Length: 330
Image 1: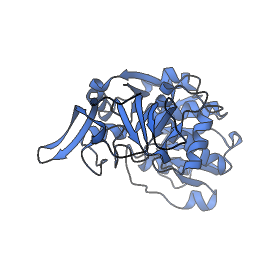
Image 2: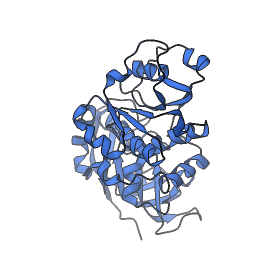
Image 3: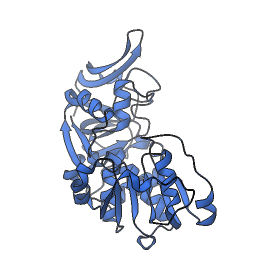
């Protein structure tokens, strides 16, 4: 299959004419070099994409770039013998829409070192419902599990539970055999969170203690919020439980003490999905395609849009209206 001379992409600029983004007609020569060219089938929308697409966050390190930190599709050309025409593949993070052209184009050119063969058990669409959000949630669980987290320690808390990472974390943790307590400031979505596997849906006041130590209520969890909520979760985590941190929706600050760490042996684990080592990346996707694959991915995909619908989704996300995952169909 050959690549057409021109195709459509959602491109982001920042120059003398200001910060702007929109659909343009470009060619393969406009994209960063790479060993693998794919015809894009799906991408997704993450909070990071909304920040990049609107300029409300300093995400891109060079301009112009095609947006979209996730992409999945079929190989149309490859100079790397590991990939051949017709192969179904995906890439998440790995510099897309930061230092390289991303997934919001009808074609993408990728560095083969980051390209993952689509695992058996996942469709291209499912891989993008998961995308960076699902990869982040599963990476958090892998890190916790490797540090001896078990269901016997108690329920895992997920903060920011109605967002993309939060929704998928609830479903993935439940599928992996953990009791899950979802924390959300949106009580109207309690039934949605329970349908994903949350045994309890808690308001933000459940993590409002300012005490450096409190009664141990949780085995650990994944925090997407930061600030006082993360500090409160640490203070209420059981001995030798793990708390993974993957976001800062409320605050980048952490005003806490060392007491949970030195008295209860609690661990705080960082989750940085973008530059994950290849062997770990492959293991996470293997699990997402098998024993950690949520059974309700279609319920988590609350929106499916084309390139034309991206600005509306960006605005909704940045206004706090995010629920589940948004997939982009190319």
